[in-house]
Each structure stands twice: as C-alpha cells, then as structure tokens.
Image (tube, rainbow, N blue to C red; front, side, top):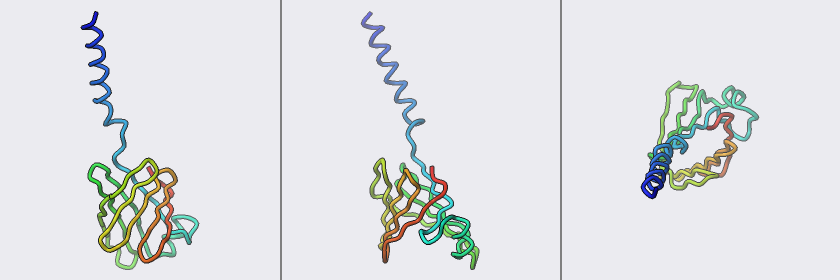
Length: 126
C-alpha cells in the first residue's frame, strides 16, 4: 500500500512539473500603442509620424524588444532593452541612454521615463 501511495505522489509531482511550462507565460505583447495625448491608436498613427510602435517582452531572455517604424523613411527599427524587474503587476526595463519603460501587465499602460515622464496606452496587450 505504501508503494502505491508513494508512486501516486511521485506521479502527481512529475505531472505538475511537466505542465508548469504550459501555464506560465514568458512572452508578452503590447500592440496598437499610442501616447497619452491621443485617444486611440489610429489617431496617433495618423498624426504622430509613426506607422508602427509595438513591444514584445520575453521573460526567459530578460529582454523587451521595441518595434518602431517611422512614416518619413518607412524603416523598421528594432531595439532591445534589458529587463531589470518583474512582478505580477509590472515589467521594468532599463537602457544605458537613460530611458526606462514600465509595462503594466493588467491594463496595457506603459510608463516612459527619459527626459521627462510620459505614458503610453496599448489597445492590445497579452
């Protein structure tokens, strides 16, 4: 009886470890972002000079990748930032140039701290 009990316990723990990767989320996307001076992404794209401004955050690699495209030259810019803090509420990056980004995981807001402090909002975040 003891052997069956220990085998069952061992099976349960091994099953939990096998499924742990499925339930934990390592990649987050912040898409259709716009600055606080606009009410939505489409207005920002129409008036800001940007065609694209999106983020992909990879917690395993501890990096946040910004994908930006200006309308003026149509060049795609991909920049990577190191992640320095992660909680259930937010993910924070740091950059040697002095700009940092805080991604609020529950509402799609991005706090930008560089020369000043500003906010961005993302209509699609997951």
